[in-house]
Image (cartoon, rainbow, N blue to C red):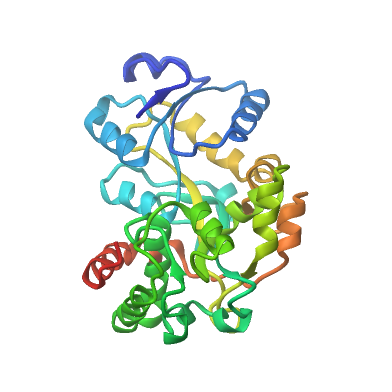
Length: 333
């Protein structure tokens, strides 16, 4: 359901005020309030925001067409951003500041990543050894029969992981891996990443895959039950001797008919600033996209350093459709 957080007028009227940015957001984090307020404080540009689910926002933008008041779409995961790109909703970004700050593998011509999350393997300390799940490939090994929990194969987080496997290993090996994972399911896929973590801690399954910011959230919680969950599980950075741990992203692009093109570009450049990168990391437990950005998050520090996969995000977009086709064929639903 779309939620209007500040009034947005029609496209022509909205274009009359250059100190305005109309933001369509599929990020639903309370800490983003401070992120956006700081942009207004620094620039004087007021943000009008509509929040909603990704599919709702994309359909709204497409239906609005040339009359859309939307300047920027911000959302999570390369799969979702690539869908918007394939729909022709973005315009090219030409910013030397962004080219200088955001690594090349984290941007495309039309959208850019501003934070990252690692997709790690979570295991039950009392039934699985870390050495048993050192790589994503291990999730398909017979020794994990009946031990794997997962969210839906149609979820963008899993589609992006599968796309990375296709890019690295090819379609045939990727499909073989997916069949092996399905054969190892402890139960049909359901729930979100936090549900998978809790299922591992409860002994419902032995291993699962989850984004790191869900783990960091539990680590920073003041609830005893959350800390108890973390005591029962271990975390592995997969593929450290290979391509590195898969990361997915949060990113944004300027929409094709943006009435406030200059404000939109200033907003994207702000997201790559030191202060914004700290909001992503310290406020929402994501890693900065800008190399060397200073953060102060005890949970991220506790998770420790790791080798991240530097596969270009445009490759994740390229193989997203094939990832879904493979998951459908093998019954990963």
